[in-house]
Length: 451
Ligand code: PLP
Picture 1 (cartoon, rainbow, N blue to C red):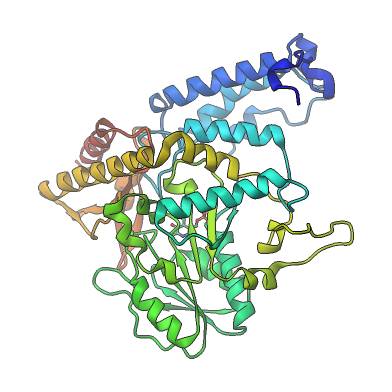
Picture 2: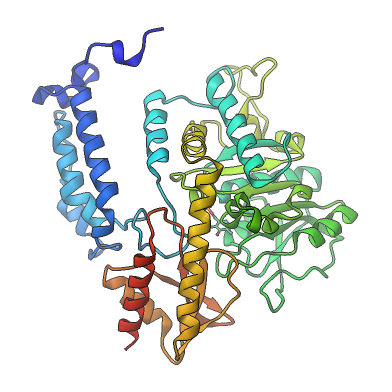
């Protein structure tokens, strides 16, 4: 086996790639791209978080038709720099506080680069032995980090929406034609999955702490979905009580821990996953709060045979692998990206201690911000804060308009949600680059815009 470093630099155009036209090699272009990426990541905080562009601006700046002849990669990179990057909403910005903030970490970016180079399809063991087995290893490591039981089947889907769809399809294979129950604050991906699967969807009211109540009838249920960290308020549904009820009724329990599940890496926050070991399926998104670039959603189940029943199918051209798992049999897609590589890279390069340090810092920063809101007359914290997201409002103000004004400054990006019909602002901390100065700046801008 020859090492990658032993090969002669090939001209970029060897496979019809126009770098050759400018006399550059793939190595030259790769070096230019990696320089650009390093500078971007280092300086993204100096850009406006949300760009001052209007719909149509980007299209208008780009050629209407594709080039007849290939162009040098340098020209593409120049246009990325001049036209694309300035029109991006920068999710990797330290003052991105909307939705759930995410991080394309350095480790994750490097993992993605290697994945693109391999370009394997991890649909079956035979088509990609290392990708299939690394996926099992990465999910086993992640289960250990989060205190979930080892030995469950685990694989990666692109998003929590698809993980939940897969879990509910498995639940339907066990108990067809029933109802899916979830909190009135559950993410709309649950309702969407139920709709796709032609299952009825019913919401369950929440208590004063915005947690799903548990005294609803289960006779007609196919599945119950408990949320660990609801999207709007990061409430944690009572998973142990729901697990009791589901076990008694023989109903599938799916835990949607897309955002907050990552907090389980810290012993002091592990309570949020209590009871998840009794669920039939659990989803956690490393692409939300575990520093892994989009897309990467981890799905575990204690009942892989139900996933297989829902999804196993094959064509004559694609025999099943012998004595090995073919991951295409466990989810809706045939073609599967080698997502495990970036997750494994993130877990290795950060380690348990590094992941804990980042999550703890985000929780600390959220507590600091929450205290500023508590201490400021005219402002109010509106929901209990469990993790790194603070929900608050300016009393007597149009909070949607306030969030829009803050975001229009380019200094910080905050978004709103609704609590009992009233708009409230969410400040979600989750980017690895966010520092106290960034949170302080967001608070200053919020107060300036509220005046
Ligand atoms: N579940 C929860 C609790 C979420 O907050 C979200 C998105 O924010 C989702 C599911 C959907 O995630 P995805 O975008 O990975 O489908």
